Image (cartoon, rainbow, N blue to C red; front, side, top):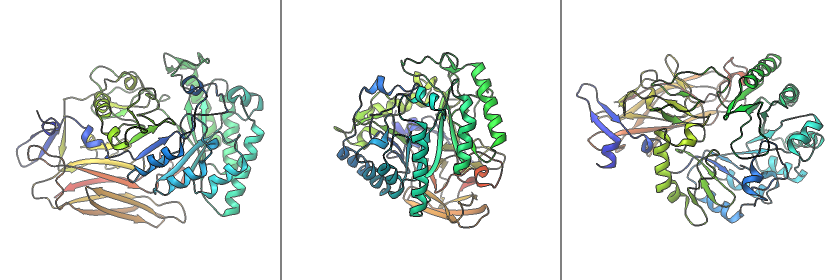
Length: 503
């Protein structure tokens, strides 16, 4: 049976045209990744208690800059380039050049750093080269506990570099980089969170990502109070919940963004995709995750390509010997995508970051229209749970699929585009094949829009006369209404989709 026949099932009789899709991997996979994690270095002066870097990478290595340049040159319209993974990128010798090279692609460029060990010239590079986002990892502000967790540098050095960063932004009149914090929650440092949030409030930092501690690899720290069989213990989950509630009440304007859904009550899997932190039951499938194999990739300092941080010891190829396109579309990646979506990869089955569902059949229907509540399976990537009459995108990139109606000449889309931060313009680009349209919101209110996209010669993906069309969306901003002072919704929102019709 041909690949396209496996992809598309049958068409139901008129008046409604429907295709039954059994393999979504072709629909979801971008021609090349859109989001990159690039490990500029696997070297790090810190010895964080929860980190497995030294166990897996040893002394580590810097990525050869010519390899980095080659990687960036192979990208096609990347959306986000994150210049870090296991090492401390602030010590990469060509960091300034690496930021500039990434910025030249038009992508948003981000970096995570402890910052306290940075030299002044490297702090200056973060400002002068236009880094878009800087996440500072702060797990303690007590000097004693800082040494216990990090094993290097000091709180005093951290505060000095944060002050230098702010003064340089003011000196050069740069709003970038936007600064946020990251906090790894452990039993020993939960009492530190209020003071860290207070520091964020003083500095105007609007978001802190909260990461409950994870122990995937064989490291000395056992985290017996926090974890049991890889999941949070009831006592730690309860304490973390109480601390977050108390801090949120004191600092309501700061978004405490929990990286997983482990603190939420467990839900039973059904036909509609939901965040699911438990072990995947028999027959369930994976819809997506933050580091999905459809549009994200990790590239290690030695050139190894891996799909995500959970599977970072399983190499899909090496960029010193093979080009990115060949690895991305190679046998290993294709096989993994099938195992991933079918929920049979063991590491993915137990991952706490997955979005999963329990299908009622081996396929799902694709219609010539998309009403979010009726057609949730047609929402491929980058969406929040569906609401009554619309669905919000959850990231800069999102995608959906519709079936091309007979004799159809265009797609009609309607939705809502929220405003950008003061002084900026929010834009939404919609792409179908080679056709692209956009809408902008330069005002201060939500902007309802309707767009028409000519289909022309777009044939979509078909095998039995059907033509399945992938619609790709990209927004310039993903914002939290709470942070913007425009509402109580703390979620990060791109745009709201209300309807797609093919006619």
